[in-house]
View 1 (tube, rainbow, N blue to C red):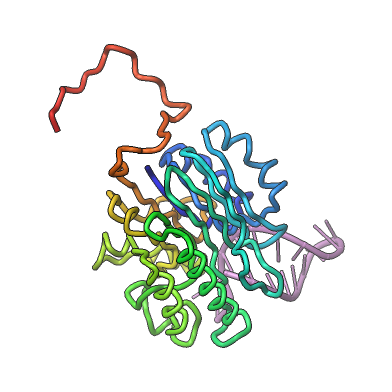
View 2: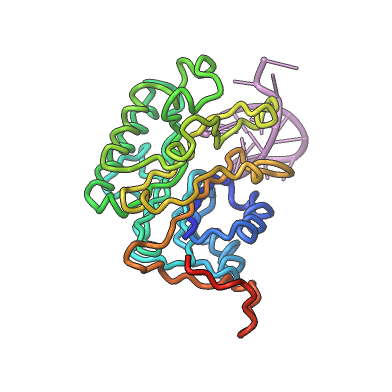
Length: 289
DNA sequence: ATGTCAGATGCAATCTGA
């Protein structure tokens, strides 16, 4: 099962990149952030193209800002929009949606930016993260995976130059402590675990050729509970999607899971557009393993 | 030199958010 997360910075503007990306990468579960569309507009724009590709959709958006979604072709059950009981600014915003997909509790999150350290928005960010932690802890963390734009670089290795961010959000100790508290319920940063010493970023500012110079941050994470993390076979950032014409300022993160230990790999079906293999013409040699 | 985008307002150019 292939999981992914992508802050698309307006799903409307990103449609010419999103649909070809779905066809190329064929993720089973896609967590989107910054969709910037109300649910009705999301449905009008995307229900057709996504249904063609076999995806069910749980969108949780608002008119202009924020907005998250989960696309799944391995089931989409028990959808919860938002963080029940969570803080607002001043009202609750569309920053989280959860669903059970292929036996995994998937949570798509767009953590508040924080704007300036010690600002009201910064305190809102910390409160929001504490609520997310409580909600994950109250469920079954082992079978949960939190994916999304957390707007925090976990360590100094996750920014191109720690000095460049001194005094700014995304790197402060309280933010990193709040993220560590979330991970403390039993979630593994599977991309960093796979690439402990690599320079890995997921976001590059549009300005000043930052992507070209690879001056970015790793702020889009896949945080997986024990049972999910144990199944990780690949975990990487799709930098290709940040290149070319009309990209988001974030790249997608892709994580492949091996089949579940109990043999239930979920309702894995061939992609609708993939030609069926002709019967009785298998060419691959038989192998014991 | 906040150098780029995206959304809104409201029709051009400027504001906000990231």
